[in-house]
Image 1 (cartoon, rainbow, N blue to C red):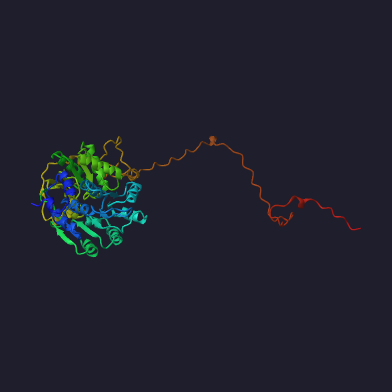
Image 2 (tube, rainbow, N blue to C red; image 1 turned 45 degrees about the horizontal axis):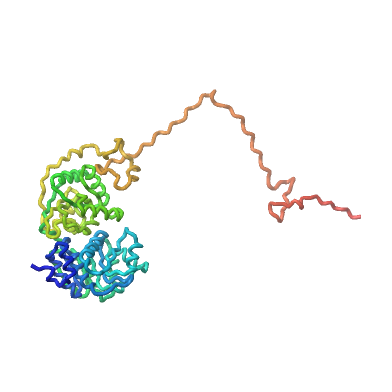
Length: 482
């Protein structure tokens, strides 16, 4: 069996790896690291959770060990599609480069740009960033890309889904053509293939598994929900959670609004849950992730922004509250469990509205998840939907619904019937009795204005306009000729 010591890595890197508890590389690491150390371009295709981060981080540290960074001129760039994934790469770099004097900077949105610029001014060896923030700083002349020696693109297919391909192309053109490129993706759609053909130089293609396949050590289940009512899935999810011994798990939803609703529903019913999605403040997202990593938070309710951005080996369960719109996203969601050789369980809640997307998932992964038989009590669906804590049973109006803050809407019934408010009829004033009517004196007729062109007093045209100086109005005595 191959060990990290057989891959050509230096003593300092091997010491850092040993302190993390790993001694055997994964398939993608075993094949990609020796090639990357030679300076050749690498095109790595591997499913999520197979160790792609270390596959490019370790050789990058080894190659950058000799050299010195310059102000605003990073020596290497790692592009990630999400802030969570960029933060994950930064943590890996900090862990594996602890015995090297290498500087790094994390450029992501939602945090102070001044602190990031200060790091760039000092000079960084590794720049870990999202495409948007990197181009923003480049346009402000805060960073130069002419000194880039190594460029890494992680989760390239996710970049495509999020519309970052034009940004990636621009960044490629701003970097030297002599750079080394390490390109990793779980799938290879045509647009990604075109990108690699255009910007990679004779890359060594490394494919360790069938594209868009799930790990064999993940047991997959499907729980059928027979109702279309949005509350039915929440009832089924709570019933399922009560039957499992969960240390920590992730619940994935398709929409950000559903993330908030499901998280509040779980919290209201006694589960330790919290939401995370792209609309939340970055500081709050980081605190939530830290709590989840430490074990203080049991259930993380997430959107797909976190599907490829979490590297938490201990995640034992994944719950697909919705069937993902894209079948590839299902693979990445499921890949949050069963990492680093561990076993995991994945559950999917399937309602009649999800059948079409579910067929795409089955076709892609080429297997049918086991059907889970669970006795779920849906009798609560017959009750009048009402938000817990509302004192009044009066139905809300459309104005109330539209102006409700995000996440504050009914999580136990988000589909309340909306009734238009009925305007009260105008009351007509009572007719006063005849004797109560006061007689008011008639107003004198308005005096008519005299015509400006009066016949008895002809208006004198004045060169001074409407104002007539007083000296012109004084009488003049004219003496008669003698």
